[in-house]
Image (cartoon, rainbow, N blue to C red; front, side, top):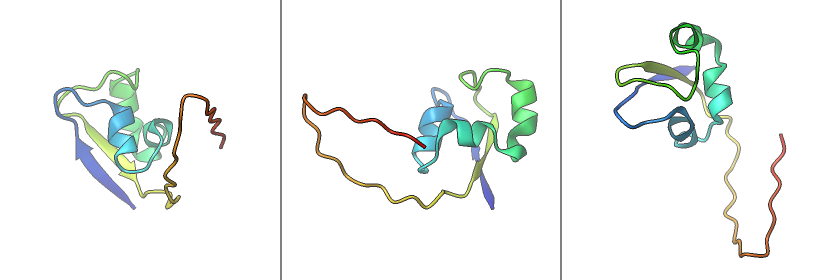
Length: 77
C-alpha cells in the first residue's frame, strides 16, 4: 500500500522518507514514482507541489543508540 505526500517548499526526499522510516532510495525507486523520476531526473531536485508516493514502512524497529565521540557505527543492508 502506498500513501502520497505533496512536497512543500524546502523539503527534500531524504527527510520525507526518513520521517516515515524509509530510505530515500526505497522511495525514489518505488514503481509508483516512475512519473516523478521522469519529470525530475535528480532525486535531490523536488519542487513544491510534486507528489511523492510512499511505500508502506518496512516495519523495521528503530533502536535508540547512545553514541559518544569514540563510537563508530557501520550500517549495512
